Structures are given as structure tokens and as C-alpha cells.
Length: 294
Ligand code: MN
Image (cartoon, rainbow, N blue to C red; front, side, top):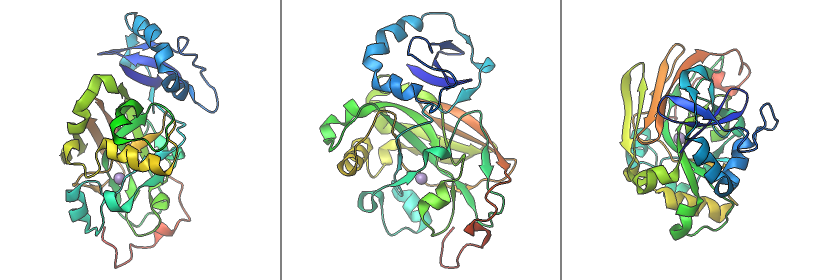
């Protein structure tokens, strides 16, 4: 099942070319704040599933007539793994890997959706890069989750771009700008992907040119290992997002670019990159320190 959020926080099931509004079926509340309808749906999915499958046979409206939004706008947290592909570690000259470095956070306020642009901060004198990552959406609350149990904690998958200003400052400062975490275009539930999640091809293009092209089979920490590590530190909650880490091929995005991300069995989305008017007083007006690699 492909579950999307659209228009004013409505919930829908996406089929080939259309979307069925199931907002009422899942106790959705358009316009609510905080927007947690998808969190409720994920937490209570077993209860809703039968009704959703019935609704999925109904009449939809053309996908092109709605505005798709990021599927989980209010996760408890976004966990992200740095250097989780060897080839990316090599291109960055990194001395560490995700398995010995641990993870970091991106702020939920950085989330944006498939209809939103990536907005560049106004004064960045640094390279701002794309990173093509699989998003893993957590299904239920858990702590100290054993590797063998991880499958029960994966609700589904989405595409995620981990945008970043290069440098040595704290990651959350460089990766936390509004719109620096596009996720979408929807969540594909884990049952539709199954064990294939361990070998999904992910690709990213800038202006039609293929920049990143890698398979999740080459992750250093695989999906169970990421869940095991994160949940050893903190409780995971329904709707939490894990960004699996980028493969090699990261590169700059600039005003006017179109960035397309795709994961097989999941979907794709194409985003505009535009110059914004915020971020004026940040440290990033200074050039990249000489000791830093881009
Ligand atoms: Mn990343």
C-alpha cells in the first residue's frame, strides 16, 4: 500500500495514477496542528488495515490534481547515518564509517515534500550538496530491538534527500535548514517491498544527469543493524524516520536545478532548487576552512 499525505493534511492511498482520500477512514483531521494523522495511522495500522483495503477499491481522483505533502511531517525524530557506504567514505576522505561513528539527527522542521522546493540559504559561500538516501519509517514503539525482530519495526519506505552545507561544523547546523530534508512522495508499506529492501537501487539526477546510483545491499550498516544501533540508545516511535546514508556521487545543487530521486519499488520525486532569503547571519558566509574537504 502506498500511503500519502496531500492538500490540507489529508491522507490518501495512491494507486497507479490516482489517489483515494481515506482521511475519514483513519480519523484524519485536515488542518490539525500538530499534523500527526500519519503517526496515528502508522501506530494503529493493524486496526485500520481492513477498512483501508476496502477503501482502496473505491474511486480515486487523478494524482496530478492534488498537492502531495511529506508523508510524516511530525516524527518524534529523524535519525541519520553518516558514511554508511564505503565508496562515499572514500570520496569524502572520511576516516570513520557508520558502524563505528554512530548516528546524528536532522530536525523534523527540515522536512519538506514532493511538491516543495529545496530552498538554499541566502549567504552560503560553501558547497551545498545532495545526498540520495532511503528513508525507513518506523512502525511501533521499541527499545533495544534485536536484529531478528527488526522486521516488525519497519512500517515502510520513502525517498529522502539529505541536503547539507559542506564543512566541519556540527552536522545539525549544516543539515538542519528548512527544506534540507525532502521526504516522499509517499510511504510504501514494508509488505510491498519485503526482503527486497536489502537490495533496492536508489538513483539521483541533477538536471537529468545521473549523479548517484547505488544499491542498499552495499550499506555498511544494513536496515536491521541501523534499527538495532539506534534503539540501543533511544526509544523509537511510530513515524520515526531513519535516513540510511548516502552512496558516492554527492555533488552541488544550485538555484534553478531540478533534482530527481528514485528508489525502486518505492517511487520518485523531482524537486526544484531555489535561492531563498533566509539564513543571512549564519557562519556559512565564511568560506570553507582550508583543512575541510568539500
Ligand atoms: Mn546523509
